[in-house]
Amino acid sequence: MNARRSGSGSESESESSDRSEIRRFSCPVAAGVFAVGMAGTTLPTPLYGLYREQLGFSELMVTVVFAVYALGVIAVLLLAGNASDEVGRRPVLLCALGLSAASALCFLFEGGLPALFAGRLLSGFAAGLFSGAATAAVMELAAPGHEARAGLAATAANMGGLGCGPLLAGLLAQYAPWPLRLPFLVHLALVAVASVLTWFLPETVKDPKRRPRPHPAGLTVPPGVRGVFVPSALAAFAGFALLGLFTAVAPAFVAQSLDVPNLAVSGAVVFSAFLASTVGQALMGRLGVRRALPGGCLVLVVGLVLVGASLAVEWPALLVAGALCGGLGQGLAFRAAMTAVGGAAPPEHRGGTISALFVVAYTGISLPVVGVGALTLLLGLRGAGVTFTVCVTVLAASVGLYVLRRSPAVN
Image (tube, rainbow, N blue to C red; front, side, top):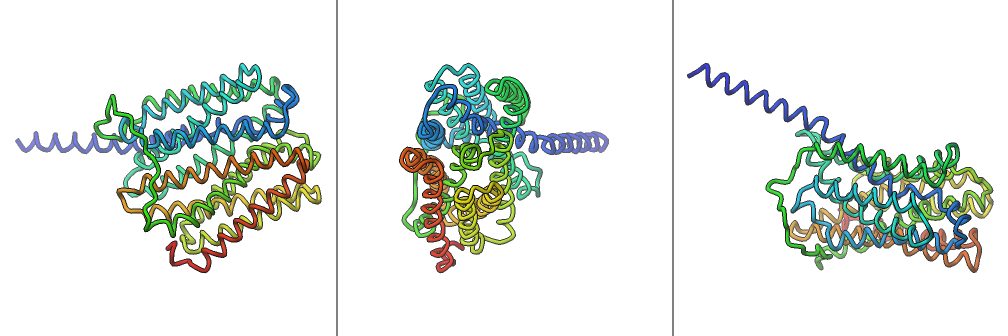
């Protein structure tokens, strides 16, 4: 009897060890899948100039094509933001990868503006699904005691993936053949590998439903949270407006206003903004919300001033400095905003409140950029960029000063 118990104990310990080993590799694999998916959403960024030459549309249309992506993200957040809680993380990740592949195919066989709109909309749907399901999967697959590290891995996968998309596309478009085809062929190959890896990931949702009843997540901001939510959401809006500027029209700024037509350079400039954002989000844990939210807003202001100055004096180095500084401020402010809102919201409304914050953020990544596109028709690219930076600088500075005076409200 004792031998049996001993054998059973050894077997149990072996199974526990195997599960721990699986989790050890599953968390970074899920982060890699997350990064591949998000990279696809920004892959067209340095290629918009080539599409403009080929199809003959204006800078305003470039920003509208880009904004369609944000509409797709917002629609998924509102209608299916909690889908992975019911059907499981893995099916939603596979669906998101399928949408990402469909988006790449739209660009690969592009035949005009309708295909670009369809590709960007599908890409937005994919990003909306990834943002919730992939973040949760990375966190839940972390080994016990490594939750904080997993949170940083999810952040790095999200922002790092967004930054790697333009870098990859810019390098391939500049130095390899088929500039409007090869980036999407490479991404399709990466999506195929990510799909296989996702298929073998452990499911972290217990008893997932096969046929859940569809019910929109909606938006919920309880009255007691609004004092924290409003400044946090405005800070997120301003930070994402800067990221929207870099992912939609920064390549045009680099090529036209700064006279640097190299697509790899354009991709690297966009990559630097997202890399700095990742660093900023990592630093937030050390600074705390009370210092990171106003501090992030003020660093964002410095970045915006540098971006505006680079356009005024036509100095590319200032644009890179603005990307690094602005991305750092955006990362600090956004993670602080997420932490403040999540901490202030009651558990029963936390998901809806955070979804509302994301909706405001993605509104910031789209509407101001479309405004820049419209202004280019009147003021030209440089004038529109300077006007944009002035407006967002005022917003970020106002929010930073407000939160600095009322820091206990976001503790």
